[in-house]
Length: 324
Image (cartoon, rainbow, N blue to C red):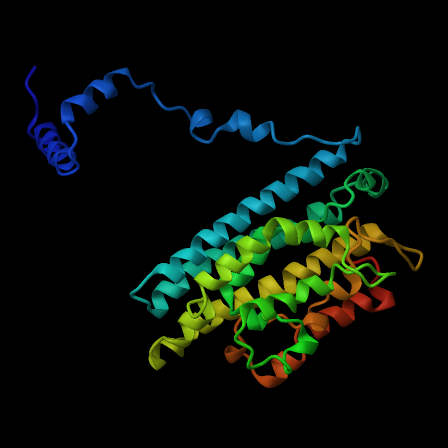
């Protein structure tokens, strides 16, 4: 059988490739002869993926709860994938920033729009029953969301709002981490002590969080942006993409959680505690924490009123139904 010029050219390129790697093309061709054809289900490990939903109760809607959180974590992983590329890329430009931020914003858009699954897509009576088997686990323990924050902005920007002015010149990452805002949201609402949820979370992830904080010190997305040439930094598409990311992560995403919390944990003016003991009414509202990744792209007034109009809407008694 005569070999076409195209095939011969590809064989020659493969031979060069393997030779440069100290490999023998013939050995790899032998392996190719015995290799199975790839299937869709093997490639994405479909059977494994579909076996990861293991409810702890007999309530059907618990499976919805599990799958939604697993899907959310996969989208968080996609966001981190884009953030790492932004941080690692040496030749920075507004165009490159916008490409990556647009992807992140698209992932957030999908997640935020899908949160109706949590707000209206589960039976409330079932949720209030199966949630008690999850103690002390909590969505608060999403380490990937904390990583998104660490990659986005310096640790000092994540210090609890009331401590920021006092620590504005602090350079010790350990001290900044001790005052990070989300720790305040996992203190026991009665005793004022760290909940078991927070203690477990810190034990499991603090070493990893600190490693990331040290790795990205000086090169977070915000700091990379600040180092751009002035013309690139003032690119309107870039500023719009960064603002969208900031609002998606620090306003809309938190509001969706508030919507779910009000839907399932509040009735007849009685607030039910979260599974992990987190004080969600003070932890989730954007205007309480004022977490802002990129302060330079917002005016002082915008920072001062951060998320306020949406939170006012949420706490207005006339809007208790939370049709977000």
